[in-house]
Structures are given as C-alpha cells and as structure tokens.
Image 1 (tube, rainbow, N blue to C red):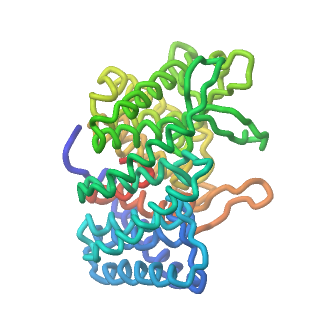
Image 2 (image 1 turned 90 degrees about the vertical axis):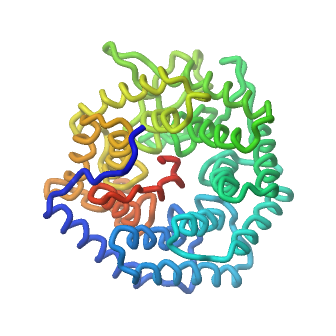
Length: 415
C-alpha cells in the first residue's frame, strides 16, 4: 500500500474544464427546491454537504465551509417537520448521519456530537422495533447501518455503538439462507437482466447489493467485536462462497460472475458475466479483498484480483459495456476505482486506464457527456445526485487533478 494520494492528470485544459463543471454544478445546486427535502445520500440532498466539504478541501475557498454548514442546517431543520423518517443508509437519514460524521472527522465543520447521538437513538429504536424481516442491503438494510456504526465506533470507541453493531450482526445472521444446491448458508437477492427479466433467488457478487459489501462490514465489525465467533464464522463462510462460485475461466483468464442463479439446475455451472462497474461483481470483489487486512484475505487472493483487473484495463472503452458517466456503473466510477488501484499499487496500467476514462468522459466523442442512461424511453438524463448524477461525477473528476484523498467514497466502500 502506497502513502499519499497524487494527482494523475495535470493537463491545464482538463483541469480548467473540471473547474468549469464544478462551478456550473454549484449554480444548479443553488436552484434546488428545499421546501421538501430528499433525505437520500445516494439520490438526494444529503450528498450536498459532503460535496461542498471536498470542494473546500480542493480549493481552500472558505465559502464552501459556509455552504457545507448551511446545507447540514437545512437538512437537520427539515427533519423537525417530517411526519415519518426513512432510516436507511442509502435513501434515508442514516446516510446524512454518516455525512455529518465524515465532515466532522475531516475537520471541515465543528458540530456537536449530540447531533449524532440523536441519530444513534433513532437507529436503536428502528433496530429494536421495525425489523421483523430485516434486509441486508447496503442501500436499505444492515450493511449500510454497519458502515455508519463501525465508522462511528472507530472515532468514539463507545459502548453504545458496540451494542448497536452487535444487534446489527445478529439481524444480519437472521437474513442468512441455507441453500441445498450449494450446501451452504448465504445471502440471496434478486436482480433484473438488461432485458428487464426478473431473476429471483440469486447470490449477488456486486458491491452494491451483494456478498463483497457484506464481507467488508463483517470484517470491520470483527475489529469492534474481536471475541464474537459468529462474526468470524460468517466471514469465513462468505469468503468460501465467493471463492467457490463467483469466478469462471475463459480463454485462459479468470473472470467474475455478476451473480449465481440458485434456481438453475446446477448453479455452479451458470455463467452470468458482470459488467465492469462498481455495482457489479468484477470491481467490487477486488476492492473488498484489497481493502481488508491479510488476517481476513490472504495476500495471494489480493494479488490474483489485482492481476484480474490488470487484464480488464486492456479492454477498449467501447467493449466494456459502459455507456454513461456515473459513479454507479459508468466511466467515472470505473476511473475512480482504477485510480485507487494505481494509488495503492503504483502500477502504471491502472493509471493509464483511469486517465483514459477520465479524459474520454470529457471528450467531444462521448455521447453521454455528464449524464446517465435511463433506458430507451428516457435516454440520457441529467441529475445532481451522488450515485448517478453530477455530484459523484465532479468528485471523481476532482480526484484525478487533486492530491486530496477521496475518502468520501467510503460510503460506497471504495476506500
């Protein structure tokens, strides 16, 4: 693992274009309707203070400190008028709690810890009263809560956070399903194919909705709960399922499946190739393996994933299946991840792949510009959001031209 983050693009024209986009987005955000707040980290307003905090870290313009603090105040004040509060990490207020905690940790704002304490109490009540059938998902369930709680515990070492993490682990355990075909416990989900066909009873190998995100939060929870043997068992079981069923060979190379379809006659022989994207199998497993210490992931498995990604960097952009710019499944999400692998390994193939994608996104040859594909009926759509909109895109672009480490992407389990 290398040390400091470094800018990989120093071309004045690219830097100028990125700053123009940043300034344009600021004007768009000023026009947002704040009468009805959208409390979503990934799709709504909760990402705005996070965005401004990194604009400050990049520019040192203190105006962004005020914008960050003002948006946090707006969001918190708006909560007092809500009749019902969605708690989830991706679409609800626990994502906002993570943002407040993160910008405090970064030294961008100096907020009262009692604010976070109120979110802790809200989550405690939710875990005790509203999870008869808990979900494990990063966006809507236990994985997202554990991202917030393990980060919170890391800073506070509080017994309250430890107890909430224990509660989340017990609920995560409840969502495990024993499957006779693979003779193992695992977490199952559903997906839609590109033809919009529903596939139920699948094991997802993507970071957004699948086993890699579970493996990551289990490992983070093991640090908090070193004597919890069930956590260690679930880590070992999850790693075993990934190693047994997530990969396939073709033309002498190893590739990652998008998912395992348990309803098929022999699931182990099914091949559902994944696109190169944050939300699908390929990049998520590599990120998770290399983010975790050797205690959980042996060094040879990390090196295998790095070598697999080195293969992917050789693909022409038009052959990757990517057609838009967003963080979730677009050029800039992939560029950011390749940039991370360059910063970690120093291997120039990752730097070149990231640079190609950054530059292609802003080139005149790119049809999508800074938009996201929403199907044939809607076409390319412009949005401000973190996951599929300009906030995420601009933050990714800034990571190419700045020596500021993009720790904001911890909310997506990239860092």
